[in-house]
Structures are given as C-alpha cells and as structure tokens.
Length: 101
Image 1 (cartoon, helix red, strand yellow):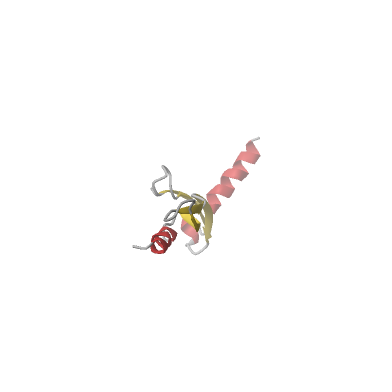
Image 2 (cartoon, helix red, strand yellow; image 1 turned 90 degrees about the horizontal axis):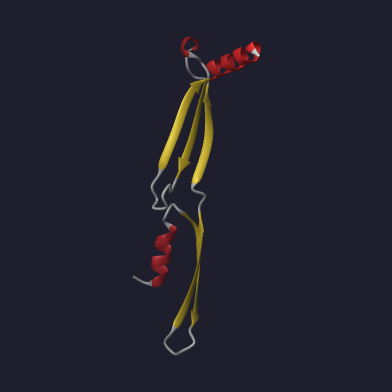
C-alpha cells in the first residue's frame, strides 16, 4: 500500500478531523522526511431533544438529554448517556420548589 493510500485510510477514522502530510527530501541521498499533522475531532458531544407528539395523559411534552464521549480511554471506545423526562414534570418540580422557598 502506498503512503498516500495509508494517509487516506487515517481520514476514515472518526476520531480524526483532518490530517496533513508533507514529504521532503532528507539530508542524505535516498532519505526522506515525513512531517504529519493530525487534528483530532472533539470527543465529547451533548444535545437536547424535545417532542410534543405524545398524548396529554402521559405528558405531551418530553425532553431527552444525551452526552456522548467518542473516545473515553483514547482507543475509539464510545460511551453514551441519555436521560428522558417529561417537560410537564420538570415545570411542576420547578414551580413546587419555588413555592416552598
């Protein structure tokens, strides 16, 4: 496999944002120097989703929060944590908390 093909293979890695390589002649005949710069992707992502498509009896508004670490130990091991809560119960808890204080 050629050097260019191997560098392109690195670009398919989800942990790598960008890879730049420069091949220059070395100091002696037959020698080369390869300078490689790698920019990693941000490993941690977080987002919130809301839905209002459920029936009122079960809480029509729902909030889901997710946090993902794409490389927890540095080996491309992915960990995801999600939580779901109905928006009505969050608002009720907030209102009840403010009334008590």
